[in-house]
Image 1 (cartoon, rainbow, N blue to C red):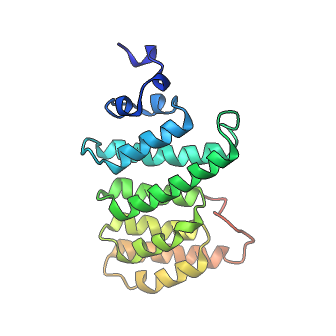
Image 2 (cartoon, helix red, strand yellow):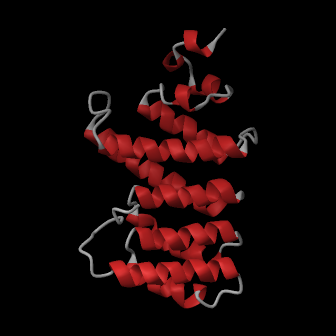
Length: 195
C-alpha cells in the first residue's frame, strides 16, 4: 500500500518508526507525534536509524521549533504544550551534542541551535568548539557562536581556536574574530540577521 493512501496519524508511534518516512510524510504528523518520531530516530536506540535519518530528525525538530514560534500549530496544541515541546527539543539537542558520533548530524545540531536562538545551549556550544574531536563540528560551533552574537563566549573560545594546530579551525577563528569586531557594537539580542 502506498504511503499516500494511509493516514499516518492513525498509526502508532511503534508502527511509524519502523517505516522509512521522508520529510514530506514526517511533516504530515501531528506536531507532538512528529517530535516523538524524530527523537526516536535521532537517539537510534534500536540501531536502525541511518545517518541521513538522524540528520533529517535534527532538521525537522528545528523546523518544528520555528513553525511553533510562527504560530502555525496554534489551533492544534496549547501554549503549555508548545513550551513543553520547546523544552523537549532543547533537551534532545543537548543529548545529541553529547552522544551523536557522526560529524554530519553533529554539526547540523549547532546550526539548528543557532538559527532558533536556543541560548540555553551556549555552554555546550563552547565545550564542543574547544574540545570535540570532529573538526567539522568544531568549525560549525565556533562559527555559530559568532552568528548568534555570543561575544563573551566566543572570546573565550577564540583564545584556544586562534592557536589550534588545525589550519581550518584557525581560519574559522580568524573569520569569527573579524565578524565580532565588525558586529559587536550592533544592537542585537539574538542571531545576526545575516544568518
